[in-house]
Each structure stands twice: as C-alpha cells, then as structure tokens.
Length: 230
Image: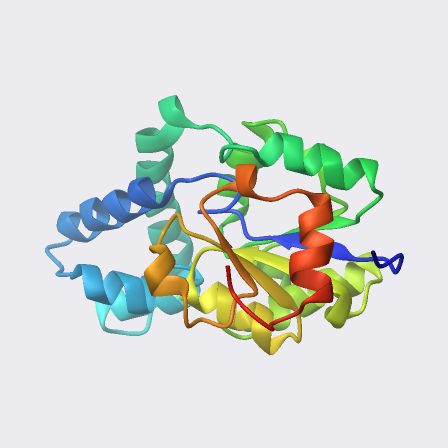
C-alpha cells in the first residue's frame, strides 16, 4: 500500500448529500414561475453540476446582468432549501468515511458550484465542515465545471499534486473536471445510474460511501488508477 500522501476532493450536491431530486424539482418550479420551459434532457446537459452564471442565461436564453444573476440564483436556491430542509442528511456512509480519512491524515476539500448560502446550509446543517481543510466555491474561480479549475485550485490549497488527488463526483461535468485536472475520480450513482456512469472514465463507481473505505481507496483507485471500473 502506498505511503505517499493523497487528498480527497468532494463535490457537494449529489455527493456529500444525496439531493439531486430536490435540486431538479426546484429548477422546474423556478422556471415555471417565469413561464419558461426546461426538459429533463436539458437539465442534465446544461444545468446539473454547472455554475449559475452558465445555467441561468441558458434557461432565460439571454445574457443576465450581475444583479439579475444574484437575484435569480438566490430565488432558485431558496426554493431548493425549503424543499430539502426537512430531509437534509449526509449521504449514507459519509460520516464514517470522513472519519476514516481523517484518522489516516488525508487532507480533504470541497469543490462545489453551489452558492455560499447552500454551502452553509449543507456543511453546517449536517455538521461536516470541520472535516474539510478548504472549501472552494464558484466565487473563487473564473471557469465552472467541466473546466478543471475548481479541483486544481482545491489541490493547490491542500498542497497535494493533482495526480495524488481523488475526486468524488456524481455529475458528468464534475467527473470530466476531475479527469481534466489529471486526478482519479470515484463516481457516485446518485444523479445517474451505474450504467450511465460506466464510460465516463471514473476509476470506481459506488452507490454511496458504504461501498468504500480507505484501504479500497488506495488499492482500487490510487494504485490501479484508471485500469478498470467496478
């Protein structure tokens, strides 16, 4: 087993919390308020996993002012938080996995396109913020996923080279971002099925964190690299 340091980088939505359905429902409720249309296919391709600065202009089919971006983002996210608040909980197995990584002195970071209001709602709501050495959000980068900037920034903040980082992601754009950063990726089948994730390039596909531990992370992801997907 490798003794070289590794880092674990976590997306938030769909990874730290299994909230895909609530985000999806809130988007459709939001566009309905403005008489706009959005198909499930459009949501998967242009909304899920992307920053509001990209997704909102797509929904409105026009450029938005900075003020409009802030207003619409908070309106949509307030819908989401109200929908999810009573059901907010960590993805199964997450806390035990974070504890194990902490015990093995693995630096951890969050890299998320979510607004700061949702980050506080989630990380503080399920009391996991203390596990993470840094949180990189959309306000700290100029290019959203699938650009690798968010994960490269997280790795730099942790002081771990990209090739020693493992990204935990659920969305196609996030998986692509991790791979383009030169990192290994573990895909969670929360937003997409295992079959849909099979050809994404992820080193491992899991349903939730009950299916992985530190030893498996080293042996099946770091050491084996992208040799195969389980």
